[in-house]
Length: 122
Image 1 (cartoon, rainbow, N blue to C red):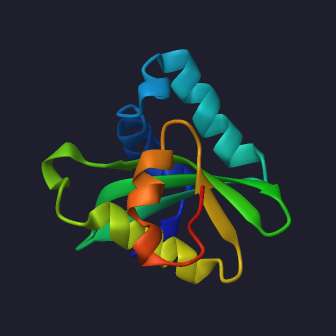
Image 2 (image 1 turned 180 degrees about the vertical axis):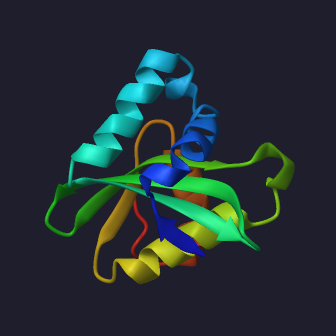
Image 3 (image 1 turned 135 degrees about the horizontal axis):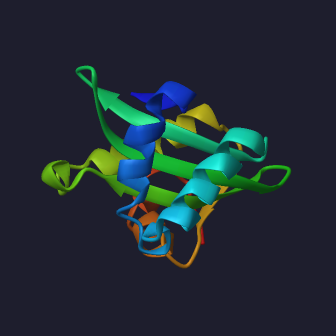
């Protein structure tokens, strides 16, 4: 299930975000987490199963009804099990009527999830 990011999950979130190609440097990673904490247009969600946080998805509201998926990552030991698609499904359910699209790093995955919901587009 997707849960909203809280400060108590900061280290877990940073660990998962560090798998994104744009978040390899510590300073950049810290700045990204800070932006999720302070900017109301940036939302970070953690995927939790059986009390374990296994994935993360971050969005940025671009305009009314349009949201960009800017980060999505699953713990490497849990990849290829459909968890990313489940995160996208739940995100779509949380944002009815909103068009979701990917950035240069998430667009390919968002395209694969198009069958998950008609709301996912490029």
